[in-house]
Image (cartoon, rainbow, N blue to C red; front, side):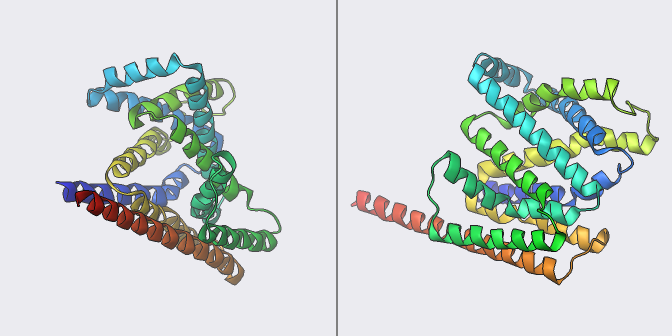
Length: 308
């Protein structure tokens, strides 16, 4: 049964990252819609889809009970609100970057995300970097410097995507909340602001686009929620190391799409920059596999000693 669960976890995680990797194709279908309007529709329809889903699988009572408990704790409510703001910012930056013709820069954001996680852990959690992590961060920093020189400016979109998602993850670490409740609550908090924007400030409102575009806006909720739910399924069934491997599926697919499908430039200097970042990722991943294997070996040794 355990092997079946692990297989299910790997498949769920891989499928989640494949969906995230090809998401730029979806947002391009609504490229005539301003990024901030797409964001508003994404928030609203994500909330609607989550309500429909939790009712369909009969989790309404469970989610409602958890939400009531959260609202009774001001500090937790504040952290969830901050998480909602961060993930909303991340969604906007991603949509804007993709529909501005910079899918490769979006992929960069998700490539450097694990390394930004390490840096944030040293700042907020006071964790110390090991030698491999320091080398990995230096490689990534060199890659970003090369891109900055090449582009004539810092790749702010990629860095902002990595930082907002890392901070979002940090908050989720301190606020243990179920996936169903988390996504429902985050979209609930932002939905009123999305509605106000669409009602009073946007050029378009519901059903004012061509029919195909309206369908894309409605589907935004589904393409947002499904990968997150698949990821949550994977995270419960497979190791952190395996999740670390799978997470590079997304940005790799984005990079391929950017270069081959959307014909974005990717010259030798950009390749060199990405090569440094890939080297950092390899060092980071291999070191974590080694540490994980060593910990398992120590655990087995300890269990063997106790058995004596």
